[in-house]
Structures are given as structure tokens and as C-alpha cells.
Length: 337
Image (cartoon, rainbow, N blue to C red; front, side, top):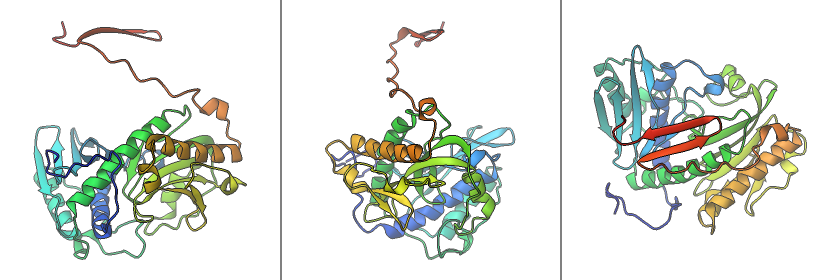
């Protein structure tokens, strides 16, 4: 058992098999509430990078959000199953993650923000969810929470996030953070060629054209992980705009394929988790689909690709001196004097 009481299996990459659709739908809407709170309190950053969440050692976080001369942070903890709101002046509030309606979750989160002097108003209509236009504060239909299923999904995010960071480091051009988009409920990392793109046609539910125009203002090769395709979700990769010949490009590993209905290359999550070397299998998918996009669109790969993955930083002892190009860093790690 883990310290939080979850059964501990030997699989680093957990199985997501099982009926957790209702939980996924509910938590998706909870993350939209938290993500919109971040969006309402942060300046717009290119491609909406100011609105995303990030994987942590316990769940997902907004990272610090400025509110006047204070900051606050909201964290989903999928080990102890709580939502934590903490502030830079030492205050905090929390609520249980358990079977509860979206309306109940919304009301309690907003009440806590008011108590902390962090009153925030958001647009309460869900985005990017087909067929759903019930405001958060009225949604009593989505009220499921399977703690064990959410714990397994978070563990799959931890592994995917780790490999995505490795892939991200192999590119020296403009590249997004590895971040969790609450609109689509997916983890993503995006590389840019440096060239502008034609206006995106849009079409996502409750997203005006300006949303997609900003998101896809420049040419991209984007990859991610989404739990909503197939019994255990899938990794995806796409290019915008799609260059000629892209979808016919050979990609790996075995099990990866092009999906006309999605306009993306897809690799089922279970192909990765059951592989002898899951990291290598996922990196092959990320790399070959990127190469398909970059080569089909004639990206300047010598200027954009790193020559080799960077080596890990050396471990520091209690007293150490580490030489870097042009920098000598010397620290007394115990009792700086």
C-alpha cells in the first residue's frame, strides 16, 4: 500500500482499463473551473500558455497565480484526494475530492476564494466538450469520483510527462512547456517551425474563432496524451497546417497509425505501457511523427533540432564546484557562509 492507502502494484505504467468514464467527465469539468480561475487572473501569453495546468508529484497544479501583491496556487492532489488552495501569505483552504456534483465543487471553490480575499469571476460554460452547455453552477448530473481510477490516471500522467520532457529537450527552437490543457483534458507539448500559419478554421464547442487563431497562429508539430480515445486512451501527434504527404509518412512504432476521423497519428496507451521499454516506444512515436511533420513541411531542422539529448546534470555533494561554459558555481550547500 502507498502512504495514501492506494494499492501499490509493480507496474510503473499503470493499466487504465475499467469503466471510469463518469469520473473522467466529472474531473474534466473540475479542472475547467480551476483552469478558468487561472485564466481570469493571468495576462495572456502566446498560444494561451497562461491557462494551463502542470503535472506534479501528487496531481496537477496551476502554479503560482498573481492577485495584486499576493500569489495563490490551486493543486489537485490525486494521492490524498483533496483540492488545496494556498497563498503566499500563509493561508490555505482545502476540500475533499469525492463523489460530488460539479455545481457543489464550483460553489465550494468559489466560497474559499472569497474567504481568502481572492474573489474571481469566470465564464461558467464548459469549453471544448461536445454537447455540453450546462453552466458549472447548475451541473448536478456530473458527480462521479473513483479515487483509485484517478490515482492510476495521474500515475500515467507522471510517466508521460517525464518522457515528454525528455522529448522537449531535443529541440532548440521555440517549444511549449509540457502542460495539461483542461479544455481537451490532455497533456501536450508543441514544437514550432518559426513560420506563421493560416487562420485556424476553429470549430471547438464554445470557443470563439479568436481562441484557435491565437492557439495556432504559427506552424506547429504537436504531440500529446489523451485518455478519451479507446479503452485506455492514446498518444497523438498532428501538424498544423497539415503539409502535403504528412499523413502518408512512415512512423513508428508498430501500433501507431493515422486516423482520418481525428486528423492525427495515434498510438494506443496500452501499446506503450505493455512494451519492454515504454520510454523508447513512446519516444519513437514522438520523434518519428515530428520528423514526418518537419520533413513534409520543409522545416529548417539543422537550426531547430538538438544534436543529441542533453546529459543529466551532475549530482552535487554537500560542498561542490561545478564548471559550466563560462560559469564557475561554488556553493556551501550546508550552512552557507
